[in-house]
Image (cartoon, rainbow, N blue to C red; front, side, top):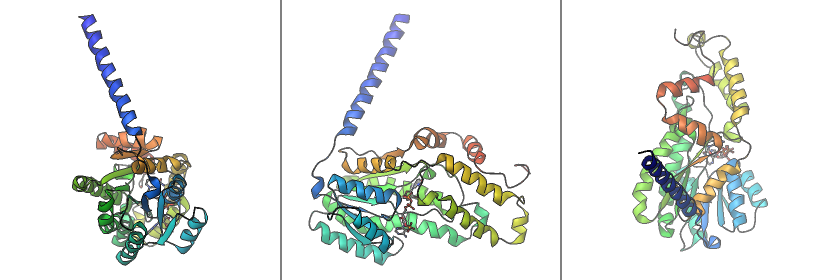
Length: 327
Ligand SMILES: NC(=O)c1ccc[n+]([C@@H]2O[C@H](COP(=O)([O-])OP(=O)(O)OC[C@H]3O[C@@H](n4cnc5c(N)ncnc54)[C@H](OP(=O)(O)O)[C@@H]3O)[C@@H](O)[C@H]2O)c1
């Protein structure tokens, strides 16, 4: 009996090892011909988008960087090879997207677009739900969700031509709602949009990958910007709502948020661009990429636990608005 069960568990272990080895080998197969492949990236002024543009340019890809500002475009062009092109793009403006599509279609000629990376995003306003007005939600949703949808729809014909790839930057905040405001909503939306896009476009040869970064030091996690905006939200609140919060709440909130962000945010943003590059260069791109140790081993596993557990853990990062949590 013991011998048989030992044999069975050895077989299971061996099978699991074989499956893991097969997965690693399959995961490492690469495509070639980068010099004939065009990739368009949104939000290239800074952060992940900027690093990805430079990284893919070095690999020999034909990168077209969508930048929100003239300065962002100029700086990116100065830091890269003449192969890389830039174009101005505000993802909240359909006409601006249309002219980016025209620019890209002139660049790609009849090859079509190999890669679209929906990376542009913003986090502010972000904070307690009752401090928000509707327009605070839409400011973020317009960029992070409606922008992603508009850009994708307008680029699909070019992507279809190349049987290309869409890489959408969601977040662990698309798996676990960490704070109020439009940010987490937008990222949940990106997850859902990407899932339906993947299924709908699979028959046409278009592959869709979702990047789920943990916390990284960039513009969207800039605590000074987030706190300055929190102060704006607080200041305009009616006295009656202010009175329902502990007098020290705003200061404690900003202090604890600053403290946690400082600990949580990794400066190594190449972990994220590695995932984006894999999604664009692997023969078998993954559907989801958890980027960063915190995403892989903390936030994503936490998102599978019962809500009372995730509520408890998420609450630990921010102060209670009242003296006791339950009154
Ligand atoms: N950093 C993190 O911890 C983290 C975690 C998960 C997911 N993400 C996501 O990763 C993506 C890239 O962000 P990042 O961390 O690299 O921060 P980032 O440096 O702020 O990059 C975002 C870029 O998008 C640009 N942008 C903002 N609004 C835009 C618009 N309407 N049209 C076009 N571009 C616009 C920003 O320009 P301006 O700076 O000029 O506004 C900025 O260059 C975002 O989708 C973000 O939500 C970040």
